[in-house]
Structures are given as structure tokens and as C-alpha cells.
Length: 172
Image (tube, rainbow, N blue to C red; front, side, top):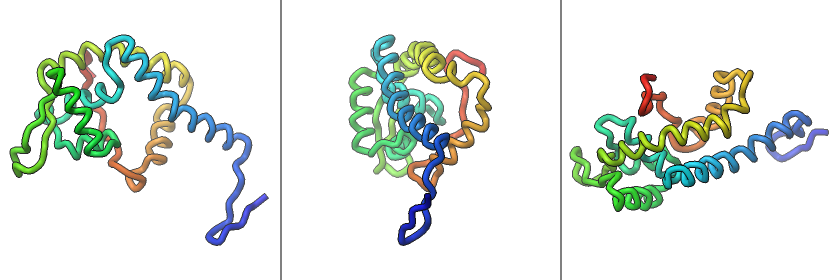
């Protein structure tokens, strides 16, 4: 049955669409929580902190403006400031004035931060494989990635993730 609104007609979801939507909605909530718990349990590092270290490790000069890093992480600048301050207290990241304009703040990955990322990476990878990738055997991963990327398109919010770069401990 079609429902009519002032702007357009709305088609109810088919049973298959409803099942896909509910599974996706649950995964959006559950995956970050279980990956965070796995990483905290294995390495004492949360998923947010890990992601900050990862993003910095992939950036030129292992540094990013705080606003750019916040965008990559879909956090507010004040939220990113709190994360970076926590990482700074442990010597994993330094925060400094931007050389280009002296007004902005830049987060810089330290040698200790990179070492901590390299230490945590195998645990994170094992968790991602066990919690997500092992459930996608036989799925067209390129099609899945394209579909998810189109759902989270640039017009919906902060920028789409940059192209994947080399990860610590690999030659890919």
C-alpha cells in the first residue's frame, strides 16, 4: 500500500528491504561497540583513539589539522580536542600550531604513537576479520563497499574516507 505525503508517495519496504535495513541499522550500532571492546581488552586502546592514530599515520608528515582530523572521524572539533588531549597525555600525539597560518592546531603522531599503532594493529585486524569479514564470505565486497559508500555520500556529512593507504606491518 502506498502512503501519500504532501511531497511524494512513500512505498513501504518489502520484507527483504525491511530485513536488510534492520540488519544494517543494528550493525551500525553493534560493530563499533564490539570492535572497541575487543581493542580495549587486547591493547587498552579504544577504537576512537586507534582511528586517530591510524588517520595520522596515513597523513603526509603524520600530521593533520584538528578540524580535518575531526572531519575524517565524524567528530566535533571539541570532541577531537578531548581525544587528542588524552593521547597527548600518553605521549602518542603532539598538538601544535599550524605552520601555514599559525592560527590552526595540528595533531602530530609521535614515534611512540606510531609504535602503539603498530602494536595494536594485529589485534584490531583480528577483531575486524572475526566480527565483520568472516561474515561476508562469498559477498561481492566491491559492490558492498560501493553501496555503503553511496549511502554515506559526501552530501550527507563529513568527507568520504580517503583512499586506503599502506597499513603498519604490511606491504599493501
